[in-house]
Length: 88
Image (tube, rainbow, N blue to C red; front, side, top):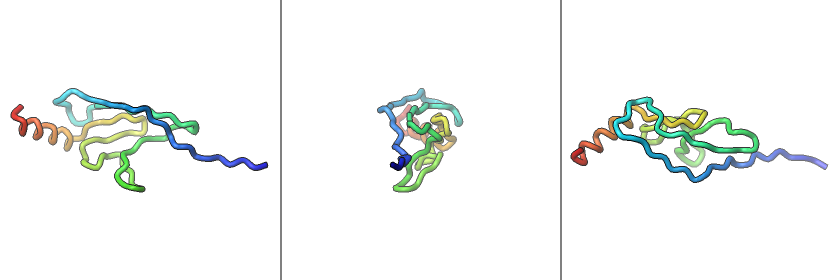
């Protein structure tokens, strides 16, 4: 008899987040939750097949090991430019 420890994939509930406009860089705009039988060790954005980063591909958001998503200075600037483009 032998036992093999298999690393099961973490589970994520379907999550949708929104945040108020005019946030400052570094503001937490969302927090993700996940569960894993072996414990969740961190969070990252998936950029490609085997590529992960704590910064989103567009550079607008960062995520920490606790699942807190913050907006970056680039994200604040992009939101401001988007609002200006919409005449707001």
